[in-house]
Length: 410
Ligand code: PMP
Image 1 (cartoon, rainbow, N blue to C red):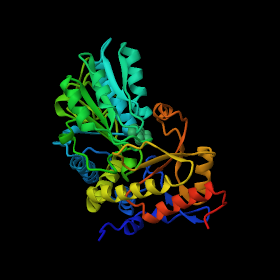
Image 2 (cartoon, rainbow, N blue to C red):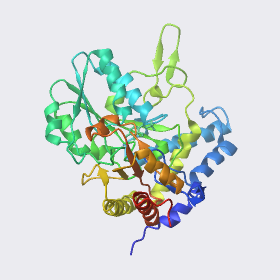
Image 3 (cartoon, rainbow, N blue to C red):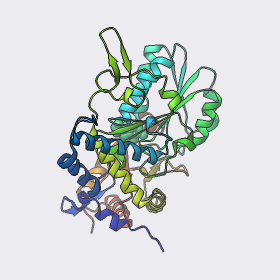
Image 4 (cartoon, protein in one colour):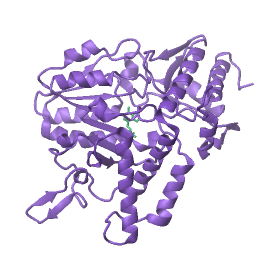
């Protein structure tokens, strides 16, 4: 009755056949990075064997092939997030670079002394530090919306932070440390009522749920290719055309200009204005192949499968005495963060690694939210479409074994 075949999907990812410490690899570190299907690996190889060139279409045959491949990847990204035009899609290195681009281009132009930028306690350091840098440069203020004990954003408290000085709201759609899905649609609507521009950090959402930037009505959206089964070193900034239009370039160089004299340079329209220099052509093409793969599987199927795994893992892990899940909000995607009384998180991570299970123990680049719960570190098991019920069984029984003082899975 359950049509989604995670075992078959797993076979599409060659690295998942690896053995680690004598055991089959169980990859539960997907919030850090995801593995790549054979089709993405093959696409990269094909690009370098048959298409590689810089992207200047008219020059010669390979330039035309590379340009077509690159621009068709941009179209795939457009469809993936449902932007209205490829002019709204800028290729960058990743979510971090995307946020820094927005901070330094849009932010430098639009943020002034005493203006306010609102984020949440859930943010990844990548959505905190660039705003601190901008605030200290401009004399602006960073304000932080609190969360309740389940890790969910307190909407009333959030709204109280907004006012005539709020220029920007920059929030995550899914918390990387806890897996909490924020009420982004409501938060965006509220922010717009106060005239604020909104950046939505999709680094942790795009692999788990269907994203529609037009329905969400965010002004900016960023994500990283490597967290959505594509290569590292490629990421995306989506921006509404009316917002991108008035943004100055971020980096200067080739490709982003229309005309250069020593006196004056005319810039390209978006997105080229924001893509100085030779881009990461091959990896953009690889990201396009990852999106094709997700299209074939279907985001709805992925969301449903992962939700089932998350519910199973949560209900089984909480039965282990002394285990505490951090982030118990109802709306969650992909991430299980926990601590185990009597064990340091590194001990849990090491023990799981000895059993072939890859999780992350640490602060997950989100120290403020862990400290909100009085912690410096959690164990984080994070899911993707290729995780199976058996993966969860292995995780749960390994944690039980550690708890009961056994040395390995029996
Ligand atoms: N935001 C969130 C919510 C993230 O989880 C991450 C990656 N851990 C980032 C931003 C930054 O992504 P990257 O390191 O790929 O630039």
